[in-house]
Image: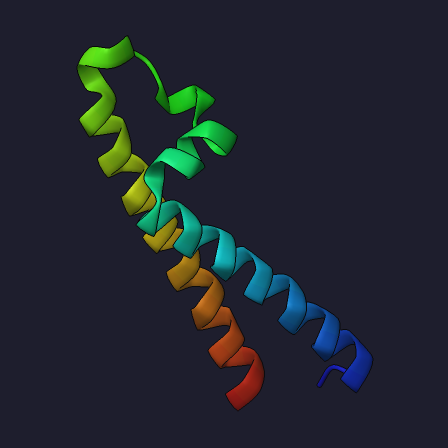
Length: 75
């Protein structure tokens, strides 16, 4: 088991990743502006598709981070 300081640092790190994931999921324009340069192919014609991709990636990102928080707390 991790000691308390390492566990607290890991928890803060994972919660930060979860917050970034939720930010991308619920505000995909913010996510595309900061992280989506590789997803922005096709210009304006694919903007709705890029938003959908950013929302999906954000939810996956947040889900994995929250699952790891769950494992850290309850294991």
